[in-house]
Image (cartoon, rainbow, N blue to C red; front, top):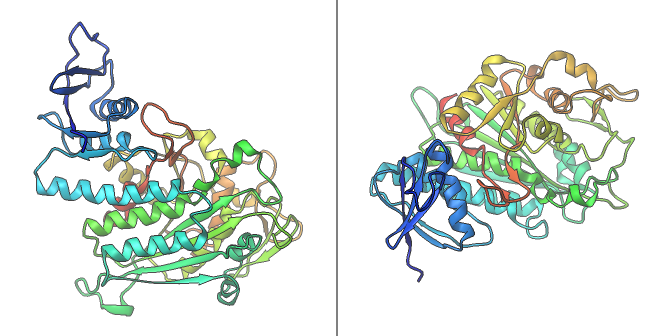
Length: 435
């Protein structure tokens, strides 16, 4: 077994031999991370240093010394994770509360990153749904129940969006409906009569070719990650459960492959949803909103206090905020602020994008009530969210949408390995805990 390198963190510059701007220095005892004005604040320095050590082939690390706290340890893990390497990290703490939290974060984040990084051949719609259910049930076997609706049974249940997007693939589309019900709390009744506090909805497109609005190869290469929303809401719920969540939460994962075949849906098709809204298909690459609509209808039927959906939904959001932030959209200032506050409390980055009632007017259709894309020149992230609002009770009451602009890194950088980042699951967990 490889001996672990000892790594400490200090807020002073390296000696002259290494240079005052050096992020790392080394002795026979191990490495030192120098968190200074020149190298970055401690969280940034820790994550950057982890990337450097991974790049050097250091496959086992033990954090040591007094410079580490919980958030710095976690930042190091975030950078040290590499889908190609089985890196081993000893947190370097014996504090029970810290270890419990760090291990809970790692369990959730590792699942999110690994399932998202899985190949599209390995991770089919059903595999995604089953993996999510099994992971959550393992955390709370007595509190989690679920069912998977698949193939033509989706039509029987009225979930036409998922079915239409997924019918071009030989691997059937599915919806996961999962109920986390920890039982009676205070005056609330227990069992099936307990009120649903929050509903989570996730986009689970396990591969997105764009359909007949086919993507170029460069745009399609990372589309195994288009199920990042489903992964993120699952990971957020997992972390909240591990932290002791005592609210009833229902989770809806809307899972399909968007492929081309003689059975695939086409431009000009019209879909009539369970709530009566008709949608004209003007772009088969705008499929995420079509599957989320089913999940939002199902969530709204539960009359929860809050509904949160998450999706890798639009390139427009990434153009607006880049890949360091996730985007937040809601008609209601206080609802959006709950997610922004949750992100800030968890040291994750989120930014609000505009969503106004007039955005509903920017998705017109000559043949249906709305189209699945906006008119030329309309703001893509805002009109996509406006589309979703048509499927939420009262057109968006107590609902917030996260466009996961910062959840996936197409190439490695100084903070993240290539692939899924898990950036957003802590925000969702905090939202569940505090809303």
